[in-house]
Image 1 (cartoon, one colour):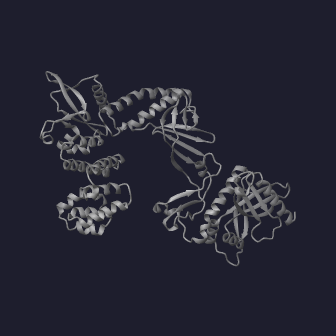
Image 2 (cartoon, one colour):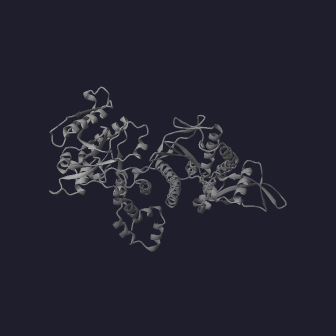
Image 3 (tube, helix red, strand yellow):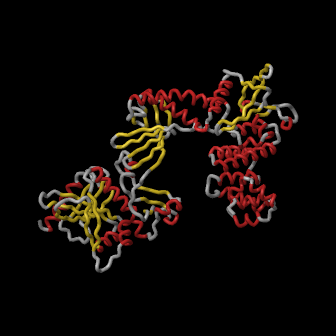
Length: 599
């Protein structure tokens, strides 16, 4: 075949293929003498190809080549001058149509050359006078219409987003992605039913917005890459027989694989050929109780639903005998787990029991105390026992109260009371009349060391206690609440449990409702700022201005020191700290404000 015939056939075959889509109109000239370009592919949002539905156009270059066989990838040399022309424009898709010499069969190969790809080529390879061309590797162009549309529409979006390279020299790097703290962007597949999964199956350009880019998205300089794994939480309700068990499902996307994490114990893997399920029961008592309830219901029913999709069984790919065996095992275990859960709930335990830490002695005591709480048994001791009972069960430390109901010889019998239901009289707190206070106030007053140890101490009840002690002097109430709040912050810093920070915020909110921040309450302003800084990297303008005002007005050196720490002025804070005596330093270092000491 002559060169003109090859080029003519190449353009014809490419046009025929592109016209399989209702949204693509090629405009390609045969025997075109225009340097570097042969035409454009116009992309539309509807089938009528109206002007107002034009999404954009993609510049193309088309070459033809006769071959004896069709390779998986094709090497083809492109002149450097053409590559520079493409870069000075906005990029291009370079097509080579290979035509079989004997059969006239053809295969279409392509190379996407947006600005980033071109810039990386220029950076990697030098363009000398002795080297006028660069050999590039071309891949097979998609044969399927949907995949072809995705390729062209995505290239158009990438091409347009990368126009910023004409005015930008420095690009972000994936090696610094954790340091920059920037938001990552990726273009999703236009017609995919599951776009997140598609991201793990195809390479894509990643973009980000950083301070230096002034709000403009920049591509990462490494070019196209494949996302190995995407982890997210979807609002996909999980139910059995219309009974909802979970409102959010964790989903992991990998190449041709979707993994659902349902609760803490159940995992379902789905791929193009089916799937498999696995169970690893949670060691967390609360989660295991809920997960077992779901699994038993799903196994008995034979199906469960995620979003709108129905799955035949948690063990669709297991034998019937195995399903029956595992169901029996769950049914035997569930009442025991549920009994432990109910018992600890009655005792007011807010921390979760770790099942793997339970000893036989622990299990025996849980059974015994549970029956005592439900009045099936009476709590008995040999000899008289203390009113307050402190016990350790696995990872939990629990306090409860005994009320004697009788004794015979040396055996004493008691009624068990959770501490949240007990009132007690403390003369120091009720000077004018005998009025009982809660056990929480008693612990704070008589056994403060337990505040940091108990698993069944609900800090939220402290607010109720402040309100209950309304007859007390307001300043004393606020002082007591402030001390509690600082203790909660100390526990948060030790454990990093988010619930502790939430408790601190609630107590601080109660304090703020009783005083006027604008009336220069220095301690309250300081505590408000240090709570805020535990959730944010810097202070907002309101809190910052309050601290600056305190710094200019206060005469108390410890207050000034705390303000400097919160403002991040470590040089001034260090100079002041070094002027304190050793005893003052030790006191300050034990305060939660020392979290911000960075010297």
